[in-house]
Image (cartoon, rainbow, N blue to C red; front, side, top):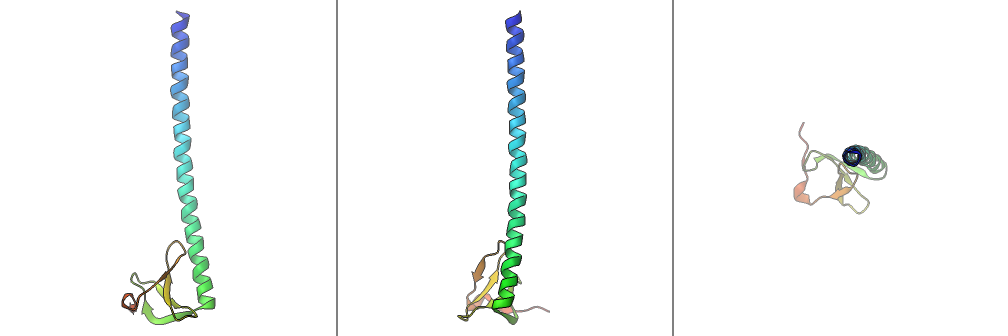
Length: 99
């Protein structure tokens, strides 16, 4: 009788431990994705700010998604994406700004 009780208790403890560990992993993934979003936004703002200081803004033009277009020292046109990366544009991708 005692052996069955001990086994039942061990099974219950194992299931509880597995459930707790599984929930911690899910919480950590949520925190990681939030941190990534914040990091991407921070990088994007920093690169855009640096671009406004060091490069020219292409007035009257915008990128394929309505982004601000910058011109670097080598006369290359680019915009900054949501992750803070410079995306260089072909002339066919640049369009007039919509008012």
